[in-house]
Image (cartoon, rainbow, N blue to C red; front, side):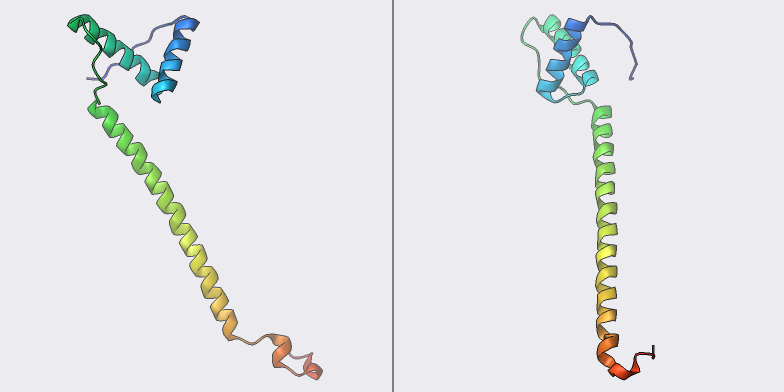
Amino acid sequence: MVMRCSFALDPALMEQVDQFARDHMFDRNEAILELIEAGLACRQDGGAPTTRQQRSFEELNQLQRELEAVKEVLTELRNEVRLVHHTIETDWSKEAKGVPFQTRHPWEFWRK
């Protein structure tokens, strides 16, 4: 079960947590969770901290974020393909017609 907790940290400790998050490319909440888990593992084992365990809810959230990013890219690609297709179709349809000043005689300028 996931629970939400709230606590206060002094600025120096918060800067250390932020630096840890930047170094390991975590967001702040993940870094705090990682540090707590590593500290608890160290305390129980009396040895070096274990490697980071991926939690199932984090995996699901990450997959959902990546899926949304892929959907956005596909939507943009679809719009670009539609635009290019429209442009090509327009150019081809106009290319089949003659240019007005080349298809008429100069004295027939009043005709449209």
